[in-house]
Image (tube, rainbow, N blue to C red; front, side, top):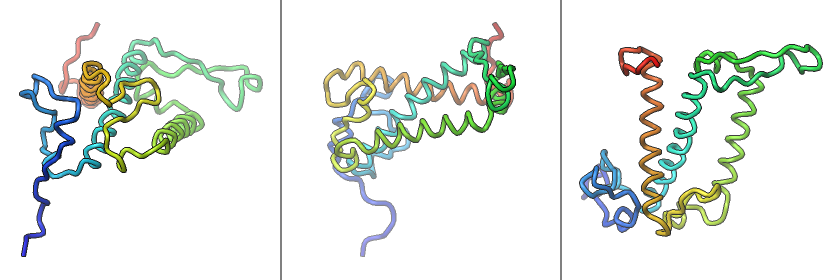
Length: 186
């Protein structure tokens, strides 16, 4: 009998059809841990979908971090139930971690509710990408459609998303210990 260890590599057309082949990775798709060797086409579509979502969120996060850190994201909000009630406003700190701690619970609920609505909307539209892995994902907001229309733009979006994920981790590492990632103090 066959050993119940890892599944055997499958002959996947999905990896060869995916955008992401670039000279930085030896003209191969970015897959440093070899997940594509043991994944079905629908799982590869799920991985690509997650990579795009996380990359887009990281691009927003990296820009947001820089804006807040440089003091440009100073948005006043009312102290208490409403401005009419208290007549006072509060401005969050320019330090992103301190600003996150200062944000009232209602602000966090609004952020999570909006993110949940967007997630629900993108996951419930049309044929799910796991049922028909055609690698056309996340085109709802005008992003690059992964159906072969413009592979150059799709590759740019993937690379920028990957770089933004690295940048967010570098910001986090720098906040934990500035010696981890020495950033210039402009």
